[in-house]
Length: 314
Image 1 (tube, rainbow, N blue to C red):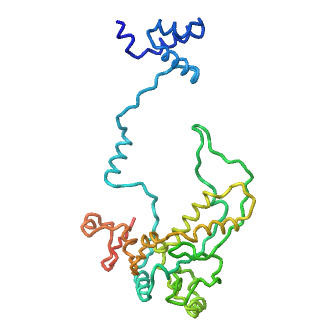
Image 2: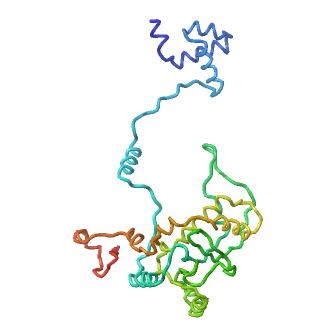
Image 3: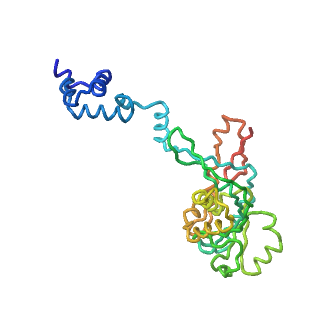
């Protein structure tokens, strides 16, 4: 009987009886250890747990069995699937526009060091506020302060393979005649960019402007750079600050003046070998082969679609 009592785990009721003897009857720990056939350290641990938590409850062993959500997670990751942000892409991408862009870019001698991407971007303090933060469990994470909406700041930014080249203006001598450094400018097809006088002026100073296809921001590395900059805003912006946004934005942009963009260039199809690969991004579109189309008549594939686009009619 004695080995069974001394080697088994003590029932919580027995522990409570021991604590009653310690606190209410004044028994010392050595006497309680002798009564309950336990070590003095064990009695001390019971007392410590009671004084720390206000009660005594043995820690439950963790269940080693996987739950259904955990099994689903293991199966999904076993096949190489990951949870990603959905990218919305419109159906108005035209093949002729992409062919035109590939033809234009293939006629110039471009490299990672003479190609520049530029675009307008605007910021206000609402987009700089953090969406998440740490707090104790069962407590809300809140930042108290006087919040004011500040004027939106618009910036024309120039980005190359080494990050931000310039913003606001380009009058500092960083642009050279084609095919010199930063002499090929890739722009979106905004009406103000395509104005004949602007195009004529750029060509007159030795710059080669090339316009991106419509609805193809995934070809433009500066769009990814803007995302990195906005993340930096959220990381460093003081939400209750009363200072203007312009100096803060300028300091943030200066952090990206020596930022390696080579992997982003490759991701967008701008290879280091000096040729543009549109298939790298376009292949991410939903593509259904001819065999699947026979089973799903609601899916129509244009035969002249050399880029293998699939248009679904819902």
